[in-house]
Image (cartoon, rainbow, N blue to C red):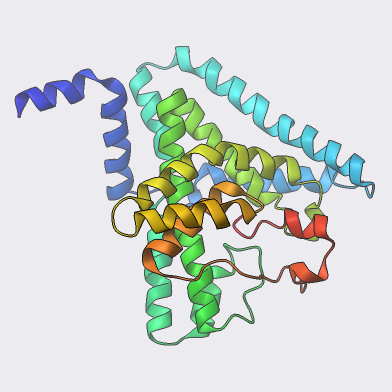
Length: 287
């Protein structure tokens, strides 16, 4: 036991990893007081100022510049702060703790489970409405279950798996930066017509950062029972999704649990079939 403790203590990254998980389990940061909420609010204010071009190409350029304006200074400040802190391990712990967030997904899953058990569609829609960009007012209990399952699965993958993946590669700064990039993609999601194409750079960057962790998590889920069949499904169905990372993950979860995930969704009163092929491709239900 002493050897195990000494090994964990001597490995600072591993101690920070377990410390952040323990802190988040015992005392999670409320969403209303989380710095990410302020970051997203500032992103929307910035978008109101610069997302004014009606030209597709100009709007795309504005979105790219706005993304760089939000992200690059934040990374520079974090890097500049690193040598100034008293204990680098505490700095890493704080950043990882701010990046992690599975308790809100857990809370959503429990709330939806209770609402669907009671067949309370109104309560289920209220839980999903502030999280999803798609319309939820017309969702049936089956639709609420599917939308909730997709949201919880992708929420866990992004807020835990992807965060830990980038922490392992780039430390606390990389994990927290990933969380900030995720919040930008939510604030400027092109599933809302006002942010198409302005939000495409933010969504594409998040999709690039999610590509490996989502796929690795999907393969991990596929292990064991029904593994061979799920791998075949991934090859056939995974490539048909606009964002391959989430596509693989939902295919793997659906195959493992025998659930039907995905399907058409309504954004701003329109189905993907009502839009141009380019617009339909860029609708990101999960952001």
